[in-house]
Each structure stands twice: as C-alpha cells, then as structure tokens.
Image (cartoon, rainbow, N blue to C red; front, side, top):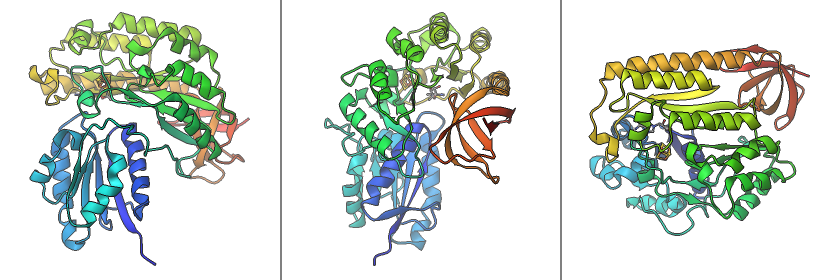
Amino acid sequence: MTTPKKLFIKTYGCQMNVYDSERMAEALGGQGYVETKTAEDADMILLNTCHIREKAAEKVYSELGRLKPLKADNPNLKIGVAGCVAQAEGAEIMRRQPAVDLVVGPQSYHRLPAMEERVRAGQTALDTDFPEEDKFDHLKSRPKARRAPAAFLTVQEGCDKFCAFCVVPYTRGAEVSRPADKLLTEARDLVERGVREVTLLGQNVNAYHGGMTLADLIRALAKIDGLERIRYTTSHPNDMDDDLIATHGEVEKLMPYLHLPVQSGSDHILKRMNRSHTAESYLRLIERIRSVRPDILMSGDFIVGFPEETDADFEATMQLVREVRYGYAYSFKYSSRPGTPAAERADVPAEVADARLQQLQALITQHQREIQNSMVGRDLSVLIEKQGREAGQMVGKSEYLHAVHVENCSASVGDIVPVRITEGKTNSLAAQMR
Ligand code: 5AD
Ligand code: SF4
C-alpha cells in the first residue's frame, strides 16, 4: 500500500479563496494527497494568496523564505503559490524564490493535477492564463461531509467594475457567469448530499447573467425540495435591481441578510473611487430593500484613508454608518495596490488613517453589539452545523447569520430548529430549543 502524500494549504483572504482551497484539495486528492494541518509534515505546500490589501506580495515572499528550509528536511517537498498574488506576479515568483515549484492563477486550478505531475517529475509548472474554455467545468461544487449542511456555490467570478483601489478586475479578470442550468443541477446534487443552505458566491454576484438573472436563479433554487436557505454574496449597489429587491420580500427561503459594500459615505470620495453611486442613492437603495424586508440585517465594507479623504469626507462615512446601522461591517485602511488608478495618488498620512479606522470600527462594533443584544428574547431558527464545546450543546447559524449556541439541544447536524435567544455574547448568541 502506498502511503498518501500530505498536502498543506494556507489560505489568505476572501471566501472565494476558502472555496478555491477546497477545490484544490479535491483536485489533488485525485493525485493521492490528503490534507494535513502543519507545513512541517507536508509533501506539498500551497499558499492560496490574496492580493486585495496590504503588502500582499511581500508577505508571500517572506512566508516562502520561512518555508524554504523545510525542503532540506524533506527533499520531496514541493511548494506552490496559488491565488491572486500568483496571478499578479507570475514567473517573477520563481525568479525571486527558486524554492517555488509551482505557480497557479485562480483561472487554472483545474489544471493542477497535470501541474503536480510535472513538479513530481522535477520540473517547474506555471499557469496564470485566463482561459477561454469553461474554467468552472472541472471545479464542480463538492462539499465535503464536514462542510455540509451549508455549502457555497460559485455562480460568477471576476469583475468589470474597476473601483480605483481594487486589483480584482486585474487578478480575477472579466466577469464570467456560469450557466444557470448547470448551477441548478449542482444545487440538486448538493441537496442530495445533505446540504440545506447554499450561499451563491461571486465577486460581483448580483451582476450574474448566466441565462437568467440572479433574481430568477434564486426563485428557481427556491423550488428545489430540501433546499431550505439561500444567501448570496458579494453584491454591488449598482446591480441591485428592482426584481432582485423584490425577491427579498417574496422568496421565503432567501435569508434576511445582505452584504452590500458602500466603501465610503462621501460623494467626492465615491466618485474618486469610481463607484458610480452616491451616498444618497445607496441609502435610498437600502430603504427600498427594507421596505420589502424590514428586518434584513445589513453588512458592508468600508475603506478609510483613501487618497484625498478629508475629515469631512470621513465624517460623511460615519454619518452613513449611523443611518444604516450595520449588523456586520468590515473596515479597512486603504492600501495602495500597484497598477490600480488610485496608486498614482498621494496617500493620507498613516496616523490619520489609523485614527479614522479606530473611530469607524468602534461605531460599527457598537451597532453590531446593539443589534446582537436586541435578538435576546426573539424566536429564531437555527441550521445546526456542528456539536458545541459543552455537553448537549449544538452550534449553527440563525437566519441573520449569527452564530448560535443551542443549549440542551436534541437536534442533529442539518436540522433546522426553532429556538429562543437567551443571551448575547461577543461573537455569538446563546439559545434554548423552543
Ligand atoms: N485597500 C483597502 N481595502 C481594499 N478593499 C479592496 N481593495 C482595497 C484596498 N486597495 C476592500 C474593499 C472590498 C473588500 C473586499 O476589500 O472594502 O469591498
Ligand atoms: Fe473590486 Fe470594486 Fe469589483 Fe468589488 S466591485 S471586486 S471592490 S472592483
């Protein structure tokens, strides 16, 4: 019997990368790899990198520098770089760090098995093309047992929006939607494997146009028996059309949670970001969404310290946050990304940006806590995902995506149970079965 080779994947960045890492593990599973949790005992290390913020490439090079000595202990060790840094840097990675055997961009993961064979034969393998073929064909959604009962389904990739700060249109390429019929077949497949909730995933998910609109895809998915919950992420305000808004009032299985990044509350900055919406149009949009689904929990992304951001611009962002009251929000200090239009502009001083970030995060956290605490006493339903740490406790997600610990819970993984929320904790809620 041959012992399986061990694969260690380190994932950086977004949910798209988490999803991609699973697909890569599957693809290499066919080559005889099983996953390991430590780099030290691996025969293949893959860094699934993210290029969106911070000095991403530099961090990857220093991580590679740390990993290189492992090759002395295990001559069979192969090191690969995947993800958006791989896409952006390409062959430069192998030039700067010769310990790297393989560089693969996000559009080429289905070619990993052949690439693995090349590196096993002592060669290097590089693939950062944007292929014409259906790149999704070989990357079917196959949730592992541990992932069920909630799964991701990638419905589109790439972005044509070209926000002035963002590398995604360059690293992930143009927007591509997957055909709706394939997605519906995959969703049925997932349900047969025990999945009860799908999150439709895409960099610009509401720009979806795979033979039907996202609204119609959601309606078609909602007809699948056994599929109980539907979510989608990440959306752009400009693609939130009336029909998609209507689904939030009409489709019961569509969960009351929406991640809708605005980035800034200042019209001047929004314009300089090339966002093509205003703070006012965004607020009106949320009003329309809340008019069909008043309890919807909003989530967002913010960038502070974008070039030219003044105190008044930042105050406009704070004001927008006060008006929306996000249940979750992610805020980032602007980081200049080479090759993007904003990289040409002068940065706001770091200490100014740091202070703004702290102020914004404090406000967001306050709202998050208040909203979380307002759940106490409410009757919610929880999709049970796993056992909790304490005896009799099960853990799952509410409709609003809050993590919920259900005490004295007789339900099993995959059940959707009615609960009453008893307590708000920092990052989760406690509940009793009803
Ligand atoms: N600097 C800081 N934050 C960024 N994001 C994207 N690019 C940058 C950048 N250059 C943030 C945006 C986006 C989220 C995924 O990452 O808020 O919505
Ligand atoms: Fe980047 Fe803007 Fe596209 Fe989002 S919409 S992926 S921030 S370019």
